[in-house]
Image (cartoon, rainbow, N blue to C red; front, side, top):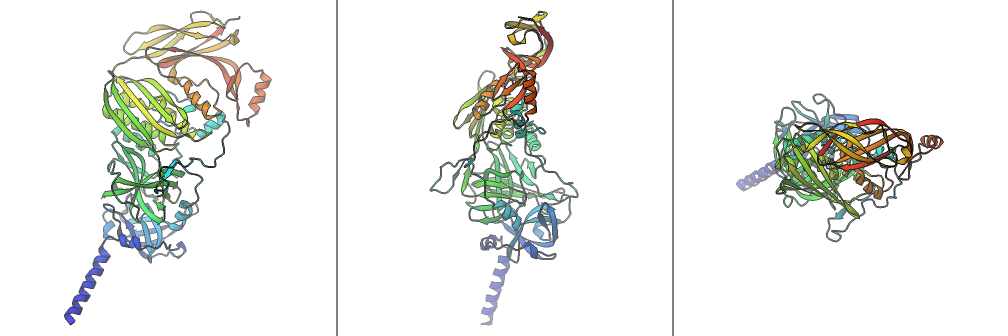
Length: 631
Protein backbone atom coordinates (compact mmCIF):
# COMPACT_ATOMS: atom_id res chain seq x y z
CA UNK A 1 0.00 0.00 0.00
CA UNK A 2 2.81 2.39 0.93
CA UNK A 3 4.60 1.55 -2.30
CA UNK A 4 1.48 2.32 -4.32
CA UNK A 5 0.97 5.63 -2.50
CA UNK A 6 4.61 6.57 -2.98
CA UNK A 7 4.38 5.77 -6.69
CA UNK A 8 1.20 7.82 -6.98
CA UNK A 9 2.79 10.82 -5.28
CA UNK A 10 5.93 10.43 -7.43
CA UNK A 11 3.91 10.34 -10.65
CA UNK A 12 1.92 13.39 -9.55
CA UNK A 13 5.11 15.25 -8.73
CA UNK A 14 6.64 14.41 -12.10
CA UNK A 15 3.49 15.49 -13.90
CA UNK A 16 3.55 18.77 -11.95
CA UNK A 17 7.18 19.44 -12.81
CA UNK A 18 6.70 18.55 -16.48
CA UNK A 19 3.59 20.74 -16.67
CA UNK A 20 5.53 23.67 -15.28
CA UNK A 21 8.32 23.20 -17.80
CA UNK A 22 6.23 22.59 -20.91
CA UNK A 23 5.51 25.51 -23.30
CA UNK A 24 2.44 27.10 -21.80
CA UNK A 25 -0.03 27.47 -24.63
CA UNK A 26 -2.47 25.98 -22.13
CA UNK A 27 -1.92 29.02 -19.92
CA UNK A 28 -2.82 31.27 -22.84
CA UNK A 29 -5.93 29.21 -23.53
CA UNK A 30 -7.03 29.44 -19.89
CA UNK A 31 -6.80 33.25 -19.90
CA UNK A 32 -10.30 34.62 -19.32
CA UNK A 33 -9.72 38.24 -20.32
CA UNK A 34 -9.07 39.58 -16.82
CA UNK A 35 -6.86 42.68 -16.69
CA UNK A 36 -4.57 43.37 -13.73
CA UNK A 37 -5.00 47.11 -12.99
CA UNK A 38 -2.04 49.42 -13.38
CA UNK A 39 -2.90 51.05 -10.05
CA UNK A 40 -1.95 47.84 -8.20
CA UNK A 41 1.42 47.31 -9.88
CA UNK A 42 4.30 47.54 -7.36
CA UNK A 43 8.02 47.05 -7.33
CA UNK A 44 9.04 43.47 -6.59
CA UNK A 45 5.91 41.80 -7.98
CA UNK A 46 6.64 38.70 -10.03
CA UNK A 47 4.83 37.12 -12.91
CA UNK A 48 5.27 35.38 -16.22
CA UNK A 49 5.14 36.32 -19.87
CA UNK A 50 4.41 34.49 -23.11
CA UNK A 51 6.47 34.78 -26.27
CA UNK A 52 7.49 32.61 -29.23
CA UNK A 53 11.15 31.60 -29.20
CA UNK A 54 10.97 29.07 -32.03
CA UNK A 55 8.31 27.73 -34.35
CA UNK A 56 4.76 28.91 -33.70
CA UNK A 57 4.18 27.80 -30.08
CA UNK A 58 4.49 30.45 -27.30
CA UNK A 59 6.65 29.68 -24.27
CA UNK A 60 6.58 31.00 -20.71
CA UNK A 61 9.30 33.14 -19.11
CA UNK A 62 9.37 34.83 -15.70
CA UNK A 63 9.82 38.51 -14.85
CA UNK A 64 9.90 40.92 -11.92
CA UNK A 65 8.53 44.46 -11.71
CA UNK A 66 11.15 47.20 -11.18
CA UNK A 67 8.68 50.09 -11.01
CA UNK A 68 6.33 52.32 -12.98
CA UNK A 69 7.52 55.27 -15.08
CA UNK A 70 4.73 57.86 -14.99
CA UNK A 71 4.03 59.77 -18.22
CA UNK A 72 6.88 58.07 -20.04
CA UNK A 73 4.95 59.05 -23.17
CA UNK A 74 2.16 61.67 -23.35
CA UNK A 75 -0.61 60.46 -21.01
CA UNK A 76 0.91 56.97 -20.88
CA UNK A 77 2.82 55.16 -18.12
CA UNK A 78 5.30 52.34 -18.68
CA UNK A 79 5.97 49.41 -16.33
CA UNK A 80 9.69 48.63 -15.96
CA UNK A 81 10.50 44.93 -15.70
CA UNK A 82 13.52 42.64 -15.57
CA UNK A 83 13.93 38.94 -16.14
CA UNK A 84 16.37 36.44 -14.64
CA UNK A 85 14.79 33.58 -16.54
CA UNK A 86 17.49 31.35 -18.10
CA UNK A 87 15.56 31.44 -21.38
CA UNK A 88 16.40 35.12 -21.87
CA UNK A 89 19.80 35.34 -20.19
CA UNK A 90 21.82 34.88 -23.37
CA UNK A 91 19.71 37.09 -25.62
CA UNK A 92 18.04 39.51 -23.22
CA UNK A 93 14.78 40.98 -24.52
CA UNK A 94 14.96 40.80 -28.28
CA UNK A 95 13.52 42.62 -31.26
CA UNK A 96 10.38 40.71 -32.17
CA UNK A 97 9.23 40.28 -28.55
CA UNK A 98 7.25 43.51 -28.83
CA UNK A 99 3.74 42.73 -27.66
CA UNK A 100 4.61 39.71 -25.52
CA UNK A 101 1.84 39.57 -22.87
CA UNK A 102 2.92 39.73 -19.20
CA UNK A 103 0.76 38.37 -16.38
CA UNK A 104 0.61 39.07 -12.63
CA UNK A 105 -1.48 36.74 -10.47
CA UNK A 106 -2.70 35.10 -13.68
CA UNK A 107 -4.17 38.37 -14.97
CA UNK A 108 -2.92 40.22 -18.05
CA UNK A 109 -1.14 43.42 -17.03
CA UNK A 110 0.93 44.71 -19.95
CA UNK A 111 2.75 43.95 -23.19
CA UNK A 112 6.54 44.08 -23.48
CA UNK A 113 7.37 47.00 -25.74
CA UNK A 114 10.47 49.03 -24.81
CA UNK A 115 14.10 48.15 -24.30
CA UNK A 116 17.69 49.32 -24.15
CA UNK A 117 20.54 48.59 -26.48
CA UNK A 118 23.96 47.37 -25.29
CA UNK A 119 22.52 46.51 -21.86
CA UNK A 120 23.91 43.51 -19.96
CA UNK A 121 20.69 42.44 -18.26
CA UNK A 122 17.20 41.70 -19.55
CA UNK A 123 15.55 44.98 -18.57
CA UNK A 124 12.80 46.74 -20.47
CA UNK A 125 9.41 48.41 -20.37
CA UNK A 126 5.91 47.17 -21.05
CA UNK A 127 2.75 49.01 -22.07
CA UNK A 128 -0.26 48.57 -19.74
CA UNK A 129 -3.19 46.83 -21.44
CA UNK A 130 -5.50 49.60 -20.28
CA UNK A 131 -3.93 52.01 -22.77
CA UNK A 132 -3.77 49.42 -25.54
CA UNK A 133 -7.46 48.54 -25.27
CA UNK A 134 -8.49 52.20 -25.16
CA UNK A 135 -6.61 53.03 -28.36
CA UNK A 136 -6.71 49.77 -30.26
CA UNK A 137 -10.39 48.98 -29.81
CA UNK A 138 -11.72 52.44 -30.58
CA UNK A 139 -14.40 52.76 -33.24
CA UNK A 140 -13.01 53.06 -36.74
CA UNK A 141 -13.95 55.98 -39.00
CA UNK A 142 -14.80 53.87 -42.03
CA UNK A 143 -13.97 50.73 -43.94
CA UNK A 144 -11.28 50.09 -46.54
CA UNK A 145 -11.77 48.03 -49.68
CA UNK A 146 -12.04 44.75 -47.83
CA UNK A 147 -14.17 41.67 -47.84
CA UNK A 148 -15.30 39.73 -44.81
CA UNK A 149 -13.44 36.53 -44.03
CA UNK A 150 -16.49 34.58 -42.81
CA UNK A 151 -18.23 32.47 -45.43
CA UNK A 152 -21.61 34.22 -45.52
CA UNK A 153 -20.39 37.50 -46.98
CA UNK A 154 -16.97 36.58 -48.33
CA UNK A 155 -16.19 38.42 -51.53
CA UNK A 156 -18.52 41.37 -50.98
CA UNK A 157 -16.96 44.80 -51.18
CA UNK A 158 -17.32 47.41 -48.48
CA UNK A 159 -17.08 51.11 -49.37
CA UNK A 160 -13.58 52.43 -48.77
CA UNK A 161 -14.95 55.72 -47.45
CA UNK A 162 -18.45 54.90 -46.30
CA UNK A 163 -20.42 58.00 -45.37
CA UNK A 164 -17.68 60.38 -46.50
CA UNK A 165 -18.88 63.62 -48.04
CA UNK A 166 -17.50 64.71 -51.44
CA UNK A 167 -14.51 67.01 -51.14
CA UNK A 168 -14.32 70.45 -52.70
CA UNK A 169 -11.91 71.65 -55.35
CA UNK A 170 -8.30 72.10 -54.29
CA UNK A 171 -5.97 75.02 -54.83
CA UNK A 172 -2.22 74.74 -55.34
CA UNK A 173 -1.74 75.69 -51.68
CA UNK A 174 -3.99 72.82 -50.65
CA UNK A 175 -2.07 70.42 -52.86
CA UNK A 176 1.15 71.47 -51.15
CA UNK A 177 -0.48 70.76 -47.78
CA UNK A 178 -1.38 67.28 -48.95
CA UNK A 179 2.21 66.71 -50.09
CA UNK A 180 4.31 68.95 -47.80
CA UNK A 181 7.95 69.58 -48.46
CA UNK A 182 10.63 67.78 -46.52
CA UNK A 183 11.28 64.22 -47.56
CA UNK A 184 10.05 64.48 -51.15
CA UNK A 185 9.63 60.80 -52.04
CA UNK A 186 13.22 60.29 -53.13
CA UNK A 187 12.71 56.60 -53.80
CA UNK A 188 9.53 57.28 -55.76
CA UNK A 189 11.10 59.93 -58.00
CA UNK A 190 14.46 58.23 -58.29
CA UNK A 191 15.63 58.79 -61.84
CA UNK A 192 13.46 61.87 -62.33
CA UNK A 193 15.36 65.14 -62.59
CA UNK A 194 12.76 67.31 -60.94
CA UNK A 195 9.37 66.48 -59.42
CA UNK A 196 6.60 68.93 -60.42
CA UNK A 197 4.28 69.99 -57.62
CA UNK A 198 1.61 67.59 -58.89
CA UNK A 199 3.96 64.65 -58.26
CA UNK A 200 5.38 65.75 -54.92
CA UNK A 201 4.94 63.16 -52.19
CA UNK A 202 6.12 62.52 -48.67
CA UNK A 203 6.39 59.72 -46.18
CA UNK A 204 4.67 60.21 -42.82
CA UNK A 205 6.64 62.14 -40.23
CA UNK A 206 9.38 60.07 -38.67
CA UNK A 207 9.60 59.42 -34.96
CA UNK A 208 12.31 61.07 -32.95
CA UNK A 209 14.85 58.35 -32.22
CA UNK A 210 16.14 58.12 -28.67
CA UNK A 211 19.84 57.84 -27.83
CA UNK A 212 20.67 54.30 -28.91
CA UNK A 213 23.03 53.61 -26.01
CA UNK A 214 21.32 55.27 -23.05
CA UNK A 215 17.66 55.94 -23.83
CA UNK A 216 14.80 53.48 -23.58
CA UNK A 217 13.12 53.22 -26.95
CA UNK A 218 10.45 51.19 -28.66
CA UNK A 219 11.79 47.68 -29.09
CA UNK A 220 12.32 47.75 -32.82
CA UNK A 221 10.14 45.37 -34.80
CA UNK A 222 12.21 43.26 -37.23
CA UNK A 223 11.18 44.10 -40.79
CA UNK A 224 12.20 40.96 -42.62
CA UNK A 225 13.10 41.84 -46.21
CA UNK A 226 13.36 38.80 -48.45
CA UNK A 227 14.13 38.68 -52.15
CA UNK A 228 15.74 42.16 -52.06
CA UNK A 229 18.93 43.03 -53.94
CA UNK A 230 21.49 45.14 -52.02
CA UNK A 231 20.41 48.42 -53.73
CA UNK A 232 16.72 47.68 -53.07
CA UNK A 233 17.48 46.77 -49.47
CA UNK A 234 19.37 50.04 -48.98
CA UNK A 235 16.42 51.98 -50.45
CA UNK A 236 13.94 50.18 -48.17
CA UNK A 237 16.13 50.82 -45.14
CA UNK A 238 16.27 54.52 -45.95
CA UNK A 239 12.49 54.66 -46.37
CA UNK A 240 11.93 52.97 -42.99
CA UNK A 241 14.51 55.01 -41.05
CA UNK A 242 13.09 56.83 -38.03
CA UNK A 243 10.29 54.30 -37.47
CA UNK A 244 10.48 51.53 -34.82
CA UNK A 245 11.21 49.03 -37.59
CA UNK A 246 14.57 47.35 -38.11
CA UNK A 247 15.01 46.30 -41.76
CA UNK A 248 17.06 43.13 -42.03
CA UNK A 249 17.73 40.56 -44.71
CA UNK A 250 16.46 37.58 -42.74
CA UNK A 251 13.68 35.04 -42.94
CA UNK A 252 11.98 34.31 -46.23
CA UNK A 253 8.93 35.12 -48.32
CA UNK A 254 6.98 32.63 -46.20
CA UNK A 255 4.35 29.92 -46.69
CA UNK A 256 0.91 31.54 -47.15
CA UNK A 257 -0.98 28.21 -46.96
CA UNK A 258 0.66 26.92 -43.80
CA UNK A 259 0.69 27.71 -40.10
CA UNK A 260 -1.91 28.38 -37.39
CA UNK A 261 -5.48 29.08 -38.40
CA UNK A 262 -5.91 31.67 -35.63
CA UNK A 263 -3.79 33.96 -33.50
CA UNK A 264 -2.84 33.00 -29.96
CA UNK A 265 -1.59 34.96 -26.95
CA UNK A 266 2.18 35.26 -27.17
CA UNK A 267 2.19 33.97 -30.74
CA UNK A 268 3.98 35.81 -33.55
CA UNK A 269 2.11 38.20 -35.84
CA UNK A 270 3.45 39.58 -39.14
CA UNK A 271 2.22 42.78 -40.82
CA UNK A 272 2.74 42.31 -44.56
CA UNK A 273 3.79 45.40 -46.54
CA UNK A 274 4.99 43.55 -49.66
CA UNK A 275 4.55 39.91 -50.60
CA UNK A 276 5.16 37.68 -53.59
CA UNK A 277 8.55 37.41 -55.31
CA UNK A 278 9.80 39.74 -52.60
CA UNK A 279 8.52 40.17 -49.06
CA UNK A 280 8.54 42.86 -46.38
CA UNK A 281 6.93 41.68 -43.14
CA UNK A 282 7.13 43.35 -39.72
CA UNK A 283 7.07 40.68 -37.01
CA UNK A 284 5.99 41.17 -33.40
CA UNK A 285 3.91 39.38 -30.77
CA UNK A 286 0.18 39.11 -30.00
CA UNK A 287 -0.74 40.83 -26.71
CA UNK A 288 -4.52 40.48 -26.43
CA UNK A 289 -7.36 38.63 -28.17
CA UNK A 290 -11.06 39.31 -27.78
CA UNK A 291 -13.23 37.70 -30.43
CA UNK A 292 -12.16 39.12 -33.78
CA UNK A 293 -10.05 41.89 -32.20
CA UNK A 294 -6.29 41.42 -31.76
CA UNK A 295 -3.81 43.81 -30.13
CA UNK A 296 -0.04 43.53 -30.58
CA UNK A 297 3.41 45.23 -30.43
CA UNK A 298 2.67 47.53 -27.42
CA UNK A 299 3.98 50.47 -29.45
CA UNK A 300 3.30 51.90 -32.93
CA UNK A 301 4.67 50.72 -36.24
CA UNK A 302 4.37 54.01 -38.18
CA UNK A 303 1.96 55.73 -35.76
CA UNK A 304 -0.29 56.20 -38.76
CA UNK A 305 -3.62 55.93 -36.94
CA UNK A 306 -6.25 54.02 -38.90
CA UNK A 307 -4.38 51.94 -41.46
CA UNK A 308 -5.03 48.66 -43.27
CA UNK A 309 -2.60 45.89 -44.22
CA UNK A 310 -2.71 42.09 -44.21
CA UNK A 311 -1.66 40.41 -40.95
CA UNK A 312 -0.48 36.82 -40.83
CA UNK A 313 0.79 34.24 -38.40
CA UNK A 314 4.58 33.90 -38.43
CA UNK A 315 7.12 31.16 -37.87
CA UNK A 316 10.13 31.98 -35.71
CA UNK A 317 13.26 30.31 -37.09
CA UNK A 318 15.72 31.44 -34.44
CA UNK A 319 16.57 34.25 -32.02
CA UNK A 320 19.98 35.75 -32.83
CA UNK A 321 21.96 36.95 -29.78
CA UNK A 322 23.68 40.29 -30.28
CA UNK A 323 25.81 42.57 -28.12
CA UNK A 324 23.85 45.50 -29.51
CA UNK A 325 20.31 44.11 -29.60
CA UNK A 326 19.16 40.53 -30.17
CA UNK A 327 16.55 39.94 -32.87
CA UNK A 328 14.28 37.24 -34.20
CA UNK A 329 14.45 35.65 -37.65
CA UNK A 330 10.92 34.86 -38.82
CA UNK A 331 8.81 34.31 -41.95
CA UNK A 332 5.11 35.06 -42.53
CA UNK A 333 2.63 32.20 -42.77
CA UNK A 334 -1.14 32.05 -43.28
CA UNK A 335 -3.00 35.37 -43.61
CA UNK A 336 -5.42 35.74 -40.67
CA UNK A 337 -6.90 39.24 -40.90
CA UNK A 338 -6.22 42.92 -41.45
CA UNK A 339 -4.39 45.62 -39.55
CA UNK A 340 -6.83 48.37 -38.52
CA UNK A 341 -5.05 50.68 -36.05
CA UNK A 342 -1.48 51.91 -35.57
CA UNK A 343 -1.46 53.97 -32.36
CA UNK A 344 0.96 55.17 -29.69
CA UNK A 345 0.33 52.14 -27.46
CA UNK A 346 -0.50 49.35 -29.90
CA UNK A 347 -1.35 48.06 -33.31
CA UNK A 348 -4.75 46.41 -33.74
CA UNK A 349 -6.09 43.84 -36.19
CA UNK A 350 -9.51 42.50 -37.13
CA UNK A 351 -9.55 38.80 -38.03
CA UNK A 352 -12.93 39.11 -39.79
CA UNK A 353 -11.45 41.30 -42.53
CA UNK A 354 -9.29 40.52 -45.52
CA UNK A 355 -7.54 43.52 -47.03
CA UNK A 356 -6.81 43.77 -50.75
CA UNK A 357 -3.25 44.63 -51.75
CA UNK A 358 -2.26 46.12 -55.12
CA UNK A 359 -0.87 43.52 -57.57
CA UNK A 360 2.20 44.65 -59.52
CA UNK A 361 3.67 42.86 -62.53
CA UNK A 362 7.14 43.78 -63.79
CA UNK A 363 8.60 42.49 -67.05
CA UNK A 364 12.24 43.02 -68.02
CA UNK A 365 13.24 42.86 -71.69
CA UNK A 366 16.43 43.27 -73.66
CA UNK A 367 16.85 45.84 -76.40
CA UNK A 368 15.88 43.17 -78.93
CA UNK A 369 12.50 42.81 -77.23
CA UNK A 370 13.23 39.38 -75.70
CA UNK A 371 11.79 38.84 -72.21
CA UNK A 372 14.60 38.23 -69.73
CA UNK A 373 12.45 37.74 -66.63
CA UNK A 374 9.29 38.71 -64.78
CA UNK A 375 8.56 39.78 -61.22
CA UNK A 376 5.19 39.63 -59.43
CA UNK A 377 4.43 41.24 -56.08
CA UNK A 378 1.54 42.64 -54.07
CA UNK A 379 2.01 46.03 -52.42
CA UNK A 380 0.36 47.72 -49.46
CA UNK A 381 -2.45 50.05 -50.59
CA UNK A 382 -1.50 53.20 -48.69
CA UNK A 383 -1.10 56.82 -49.73
CA UNK A 384 2.26 57.15 -48.00
CA UNK A 385 3.95 53.90 -48.94
CA UNK A 386 2.52 52.51 -52.18
CA UNK A 387 4.66 54.66 -54.47
CA UNK A 388 7.82 54.00 -52.45
CA UNK A 389 7.31 50.23 -52.37
CA UNK A 390 6.38 50.13 -56.07
CA UNK A 391 9.56 51.98 -56.98
CA UNK A 392 11.65 49.68 -54.80
CA UNK A 393 10.03 46.61 -56.40
CA UNK A 394 10.67 47.92 -59.92
CA UNK A 395 14.28 48.72 -59.08
CA UNK A 396 14.72 45.36 -57.40
CA UNK A 397 13.46 43.43 -60.43
CA UNK A 398 15.61 45.50 -62.78
CA UNK A 399 18.78 45.05 -60.72
CA UNK A 400 18.12 41.29 -60.52
CA UNK A 401 17.92 40.75 -64.27
CA UNK A 402 20.03 43.72 -65.44
CA UNK A 403 22.70 44.33 -62.78
CA UNK A 404 25.21 45.93 -65.20
CA UNK A 405 26.21 49.40 -64.02
CA UNK A 406 26.85 50.83 -67.45
CA UNK A 407 25.39 53.42 -69.81
CA UNK A 408 21.85 52.43 -70.69
CA UNK A 409 18.87 53.83 -72.51
CA UNK A 410 15.69 52.58 -70.85
CA UNK A 411 12.22 52.47 -72.35
CA UNK A 412 9.53 51.99 -69.73
CA UNK A 413 5.85 51.39 -70.38
CA UNK A 414 3.92 51.78 -67.13
CA UNK A 415 0.19 51.19 -66.73
CA UNK A 416 -1.98 52.01 -63.72
CA UNK A 417 -5.47 50.49 -63.71
CA UNK A 418 -8.18 52.00 -61.49
CA UNK A 419 -11.74 51.05 -60.73
CA UNK A 420 -14.21 53.31 -62.55
CA UNK A 421 -11.57 55.14 -64.61
CA UNK A 422 -9.64 54.51 -67.82
CA UNK A 423 -6.11 53.15 -67.33
CA UNK A 424 -3.21 55.58 -67.20
CA UNK A 425 -0.55 54.51 -69.72
CA UNK A 426 2.87 56.18 -70.00
CA UNK A 427 5.87 55.62 -72.26
CA UNK A 428 9.12 56.94 -70.79
CA UNK A 429 12.63 57.06 -72.20
CA UNK A 430 15.40 57.53 -69.65
CA UNK A 431 19.18 57.39 -69.66
CA UNK A 432 21.66 56.52 -66.93
CA UNK A 433 25.37 55.94 -66.66
CA UNK A 434 24.82 53.72 -63.58
CA UNK A 435 22.55 51.04 -64.98
CA UNK A 436 18.82 50.64 -65.50
CA UNK A 437 17.91 50.10 -61.83
CA UNK A 438 18.99 53.65 -60.98
CA UNK A 439 16.34 55.28 -63.21
CA UNK A 440 13.39 52.90 -63.37
CA UNK A 441 11.74 54.76 -60.48
CA UNK A 442 11.41 57.76 -62.80
CA UNK A 443 8.62 56.06 -64.75
CA UNK A 444 5.55 58.30 -64.71
CA UNK A 445 3.31 55.35 -63.87
CA UNK A 446 5.14 55.07 -60.55
CA UNK A 447 5.35 58.81 -59.96
CA UNK A 448 1.58 59.34 -60.25
CA UNK A 449 0.77 56.83 -57.48
CA UNK A 450 1.22 59.26 -54.59
CA UNK A 451 -0.96 62.05 -56.03
CA UNK A 452 -3.59 59.48 -56.98
CA UNK A 453 -3.79 58.08 -53.46
CA UNK A 454 -3.34 61.46 -51.73
CA UNK A 455 -5.74 63.46 -53.88
CA UNK A 456 -8.15 65.68 -51.87
CA UNK A 457 -11.25 64.74 -53.88
CA UNK A 458 -12.13 61.06 -53.48
CA UNK A 459 -10.62 57.67 -52.81
CA UNK A 460 -9.00 55.94 -55.77
CA UNK A 461 -9.08 52.16 -56.02
CA UNK A 462 -5.87 51.14 -57.82
CA UNK A 463 -6.46 47.64 -59.14
CA UNK A 464 -3.07 46.85 -60.69
CA UNK A 465 0.29 48.27 -61.74
CA UNK A 466 2.23 46.96 -64.75
CA UNK A 467 5.79 48.02 -65.55
CA UNK A 468 7.49 46.90 -68.77
CA UNK A 469 11.20 47.76 -68.84
CA UNK A 470 13.24 47.46 -72.06
CA UNK A 471 16.94 48.22 -71.86
CA UNK A 472 19.54 48.94 -74.53
CA UNK A 473 23.18 49.31 -73.54
CA UNK A 474 23.90 52.45 -75.54
CA UNK A 475 24.27 56.20 -75.01
CA UNK A 476 21.39 57.61 -77.04
CA UNK A 477 21.29 60.86 -75.05
CA UNK A 478 22.01 64.55 -75.59
CA UNK A 479 22.48 67.46 -73.18
CA UNK A 480 21.03 70.91 -73.92
CA UNK A 481 23.98 73.27 -73.49
CA UNK A 482 22.79 76.47 -75.21
CA UNK A 483 20.02 78.25 -77.12
CA UNK A 484 20.07 81.14 -79.59
CA UNK A 485 17.26 82.83 -81.53
CA UNK A 486 17.96 83.09 -85.27
CA UNK A 487 16.33 86.55 -85.43
CA UNK A 488 16.51 89.69 -83.29
CA UNK A 489 12.80 89.54 -82.45
CA UNK A 490 10.18 86.84 -82.41
CA UNK A 491 7.19 87.05 -84.72
CA UNK A 492 3.92 87.18 -82.76
CA UNK A 493 1.07 84.93 -83.83
CA UNK A 494 3.35 82.77 -85.99
CA UNK A 495 5.64 79.75 -85.84
CA UNK A 496 9.23 80.60 -84.92
CA UNK A 497 12.44 78.57 -84.54
CA UNK A 498 15.18 78.44 -81.95
CA UNK A 499 18.67 77.02 -82.42
CA UNK A 500 19.49 74.57 -79.63
CA UNK A 501 23.08 73.41 -79.11
CA UNK A 502 23.21 69.76 -78.07
CA UNK A 503 26.07 67.75 -76.61
CA UNK A 504 25.90 63.99 -77.28
CA UNK A 505 27.74 61.53 -75.11
CA UNK A 506 31.30 61.14 -76.47
CA UNK A 507 30.56 63.21 -79.54
CA UNK A 508 30.85 66.70 -80.94
CA UNK A 509 28.19 69.35 -80.19
CA UNK A 510 25.66 70.03 -82.92
CA UNK A 511 22.81 72.49 -83.44
CA UNK A 512 19.18 71.53 -83.92
CA UNK A 513 16.47 73.92 -85.09
CA UNK A 514 13.33 73.46 -82.96
CA UNK A 515 9.95 75.00 -83.88
CA UNK A 516 7.65 76.77 -81.43
CA UNK A 517 4.62 79.07 -81.57
CA UNK A 518 4.43 82.64 -80.22
CA UNK A 519 0.96 83.86 -79.12
CA UNK A 520 -0.12 87.17 -80.60
CA UNK A 521 -0.89 88.39 -77.07
CA UNK A 522 2.86 88.58 -76.33
CA UNK A 523 3.47 91.18 -79.07
CA UNK A 524 5.76 93.99 -77.94
CA UNK A 525 6.90 92.25 -74.74
CA UNK A 526 10.17 90.81 -73.46
CA UNK A 527 9.99 87.08 -72.76
CA UNK A 528 12.28 84.42 -71.38
CA UNK A 529 12.54 81.55 -73.84
CA UNK A 530 13.40 78.24 -72.17
CA UNK A 531 14.18 74.93 -73.84
CA UNK A 532 14.09 72.00 -71.42
CA UNK A 533 13.81 68.22 -71.54
CA UNK A 534 10.19 67.08 -71.27
CA UNK A 535 10.35 65.17 -67.98
CA UNK A 536 11.86 68.18 -66.18
CA UNK A 537 9.43 70.75 -67.58
CA UNK A 538 7.21 72.58 -65.14
CA UNK A 539 3.48 71.96 -65.34
CA UNK A 540 1.53 74.34 -67.56
CA UNK A 541 -1.80 73.60 -65.87
CA UNK A 542 -4.02 74.96 -63.17
CA UNK A 543 -4.50 72.92 -59.97
CA UNK A 544 -7.13 70.23 -60.69
CA UNK A 545 -10.55 70.62 -59.12
CA UNK A 546 -11.76 67.03 -59.49
CA UNK A 547 -10.42 63.53 -59.99
CA UNK A 548 -11.21 63.80 -63.70
CA UNK A 549 -9.13 66.99 -63.85
CA UNK A 550 -6.34 65.21 -61.99
CA UNK A 551 -6.30 62.30 -64.41
CA UNK A 552 -6.34 64.73 -67.34
CA UNK A 553 -3.49 66.70 -65.74
CA UNK A 554 -1.29 63.63 -65.84
CA UNK A 555 -1.43 64.00 -69.61
CA UNK A 556 0.68 67.15 -69.17
CA UNK A 557 3.53 65.09 -67.75
CA UNK A 558 6.04 64.73 -70.55
CA UNK A 559 8.51 61.96 -71.46
CA UNK A 560 12.25 62.48 -71.74
CA UNK A 561 12.19 62.36 -75.55
CA UNK A 562 10.49 65.73 -75.99
CA UNK A 563 11.83 69.29 -76.23
CA UNK A 564 9.58 71.68 -74.30
CA UNK A 565 9.90 75.29 -75.49
CA UNK A 566 8.26 77.64 -72.99
CA UNK A 567 7.80 81.41 -73.13
CA UNK A 568 7.58 83.21 -69.78
CA UNK A 569 6.40 86.80 -69.66
CA UNK A 570 6.67 89.36 -66.87
CA UNK A 571 2.89 89.68 -66.76
CA UNK A 572 0.66 87.59 -64.55
CA UNK A 573 -2.60 85.77 -65.06
CA UNK A 574 -4.82 83.59 -62.89
CA UNK A 575 -6.05 80.05 -62.64
CA UNK A 576 -9.80 80.17 -61.96
CA UNK A 577 -11.88 77.01 -61.66
CA UNK A 578 -9.17 75.01 -63.39
CA UNK A 579 -8.62 77.39 -66.35
CA UNK A 580 -5.62 79.61 -67.02
CA UNK A 581 -6.65 83.20 -67.79
CA UNK A 582 -3.99 85.65 -68.96
CA UNK A 583 -3.75 89.43 -69.45
CA UNK A 584 -5.86 90.37 -66.42
CA UNK A 585 -5.67 94.05 -65.35
CA UNK A 586 -3.48 94.92 -62.37
CA UNK A 587 -6.51 95.78 -60.20
CA UNK A 588 -7.96 92.29 -60.72
CA UNK A 589 -4.63 90.61 -59.95
CA UNK A 590 -4.22 92.65 -56.75
CA UNK A 591 -7.68 91.61 -55.62
CA UNK A 592 -6.91 87.95 -56.35
CA UNK A 593 -3.63 88.15 -54.40
CA UNK A 594 -5.51 89.37 -51.33
CA UNK A 595 -8.16 86.64 -51.61
CA UNK A 596 -6.04 84.01 -49.90
CA UNK A 597 -9.11 82.01 -48.82
CA UNK A 598 -10.47 81.51 -52.35
CA UNK A 599 -9.58 77.85 -52.98
CA UNK A 600 -10.36 77.92 -56.71
CA UNK A 601 -8.26 80.95 -57.66
CA UNK A 602 -4.45 81.17 -57.83
CA UNK A 603 -2.23 83.63 -59.66
CA UNK A 604 0.06 82.26 -62.39
CA UNK A 605 2.78 83.48 -64.75
CA UNK A 606 1.47 83.81 -68.30
CA UNK A 607 3.26 81.33 -70.54
CA UNK A 608 3.11 79.48 -73.82
CA UNK A 609 4.51 76.01 -74.46
CA UNK A 610 5.32 74.13 -77.65
CA UNK A 611 6.49 70.53 -77.81
CA UNK A 612 8.82 68.94 -80.35
CA UNK A 613 9.74 65.22 -80.49
CA UNK A 614 13.38 64.18 -80.13
CA UNK A 615 15.31 61.21 -81.46
CA UNK A 616 17.38 61.09 -78.28
CA UNK A 617 16.81 61.05 -74.55
CA UNK A 618 17.12 64.75 -73.73
CA UNK A 619 18.67 66.15 -70.58
CA UNK A 620 19.32 69.65 -69.24
CA UNK A 621 17.92 73.07 -70.15
CA UNK A 622 18.93 76.52 -71.39
CA UNK A 623 17.17 79.87 -71.72
CA UNK A 624 17.52 83.32 -73.22
CA UNK A 625 15.66 86.66 -72.97
CA UNK A 626 14.31 87.96 -76.26
CA UNK A 627 11.92 90.59 -77.57
CA UNK A 628 8.64 89.79 -79.29
CA UNK A 629 7.98 92.07 -82.25
CA UNK A 630 4.83 94.11 -82.79
CA UNK A 631 1.86 92.93 -84.80
